[in-house]
Image (cartoon, rainbow over all chains, first blue to last red; front, side, top):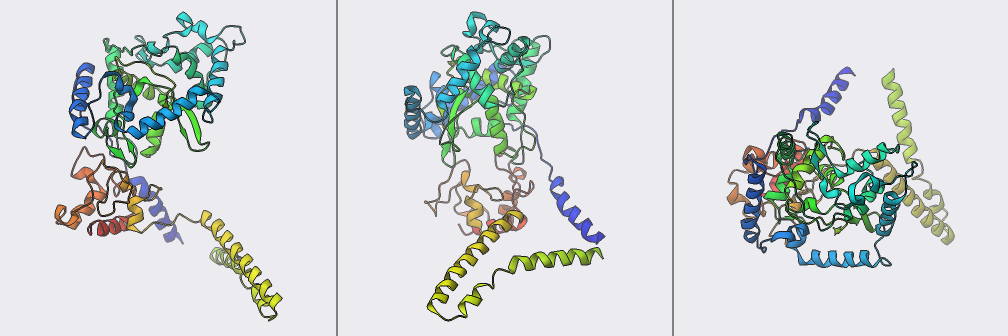
Amino acid sequence: MKNILVILLFAFSASAFAAEKTGPVNTVGYAEKTPEATLKAIQDHFKKDFPAKGYAEIQGDAYVNGSLNFNKGSVQYSKFMSDRMAEGFDAPVGYNEAIAVSKKLWEAPFANGKKFSDCFANGGKGAANQYPRVNQTSGKVETFEGALNKCLVANGEKALDFGDMKAMGALTLAPRKLSDGERINIVVNTDAEKAAFNRGKEIFYGRLGKFEQTCAHCHIQKAGNLARTEELSPVIGQAAHWPVFRMDRATDGVAVITLQKRYEGCQNSVQVAKPIKPGSDASNDLEYFHTYLSTGLPFSSGIFRK
Amino acid sequence: MKKIIFLAILGALLLQGCNTAGQSKVAASTGSEVGKAAAASEAAAAASAASARQAVKTNYNLPAIQMDPKIIFSSSARGNGNCSACHSIPANPALVAGDMGPPMIGMKERFPDIKKLRAAIADQRVFAPDTIMPPFGRMELLTPAQIDALTTYLYTL
């Protein structure tokens, strides 16, 4: 009997011996020492790589359109869904609901009579584009979602769960819209900013999960390639359009999702046992690095993406 | 003693699982048309009950390990390779596949030693340190037997 137990124990613990081999992937941009050089290397790579893969070169603001640059069908579908969202009466399930929640959360006064817009200059106009930024004293990255929660707590309200898309996700729709059209402008100057950039970069180029894949694999090395039926979007432009409405299979409609929630989705795809969570320091660092790569592109929140 | 109790419970459970299967025999033995119809409907009911029980049972079982290499290659369900997310098979143009990895063609020429093909599926990082390909063997995403089946199949392409 004991022998059987030992054998069983050994069989079950065998999977524990299969340890992940982490570490960075030395693909385009990793070896570059400065933020400017990193971005330049990636831009230069895409300039050559997309024509080599049979696509037109992506110019300027078109980067915000991500994988739509590679597929006319995706453009048509995206337009169809965007039109339905804009018209309202034929909006996909989930769209009007999210907009209503956002309006209510953003505009309703707190118990003390103050509102979200009192926490930001100009009633919140352009506020989202002030983030992510580095707190020079703590060295930590602050995000817009973090600022929204700070505002709640400062006014005696309960902070929202960063991963709750029905509350935090929907809330971000209204205030982020107030920055639409503004150009992302992240300048990495101070030591604290450089350190945050490098921490985010290590996560972006670092192998994750049982699949041992990296963000850089899919969104630099294989950007424009097909993952079964979908073209992979290039990293440049990705951080400019959050939150997005994505297709929701459960309702056959759309669901709102923030950038950091999307990080969690990516990690689930590559079977990460303990994904970095929305609102965590690691997620914030990744957002900082990621957003830097979209510097100069226009803020375009609340759009539709498959 | 414990062993005996364990076996007795197991035996009882097994018997319980079988005891409805013989019921329709009684009706079939009546011989009349009505009896036959009743027997048929009972047999159908027994069959559907059996299949329902089977469905319930499978929920408690460990998922069966897929051994059909074509399904291992194309399925994205857990326990399969989802190889076609990245690799196409030119010999099978109906297969919806990605293009992140090379197409599966001329495998014998590309891998004169079949062992190297197997090793690449098990852990391609040994041959290309910066590869995107998951280490199916080392990280136990597939079982050794599944990798063997896949290797044999791919070698025919």
